[in-house]
Length: 197
Image (cartoon, rainbow, N blue to C red; front, side):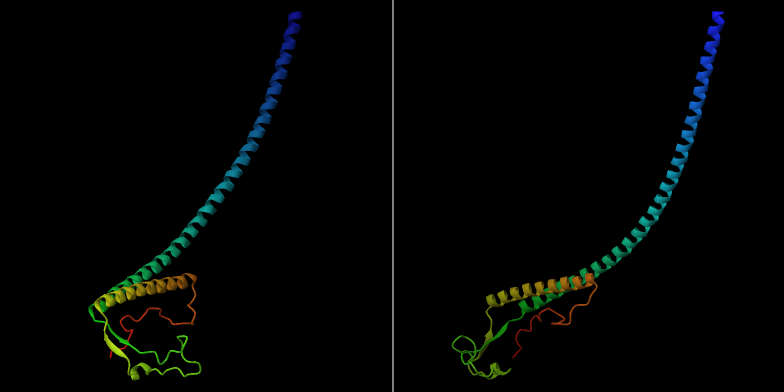
């Protein structure tokens, strides 16, 4: 009888273990379904966000490409303007170096006061004061002096063109018009320092 009682106890224990195993399996299945649902929901949200991000990236890329195209056009126009300025400066330099430089030296002692300025209370000389000055002299500048003058003028023209280019680019980038004060063109008139006699 002991053997039958032992078998019955063993069967009860096995039945209890099967029942516990079955219940735990059901709990694990319920947890799996809940986790699977949460994962599916999260994957759907991630997919929607990825699609939205892709559309936004495409939109921003198109905007960037449009702005880059505008910058490229500005850059090309500025490069063309700079190249024209360099060509003009080189042509003016060749013209200055090929022609003799005529200068006129005025005797300014009558206009100078004790401090180097005009006399106090005296009227300023007229526009043609140099033309009526009997002590003025004119002649050709020596070749060395003319070369130094041409070098200085070329350097000034280069700086003036670079300044005008940077100024135009600055106002172009800002999207505003340059102020009306001052001359519109900062380039020096090369070869027109003195009127030809």
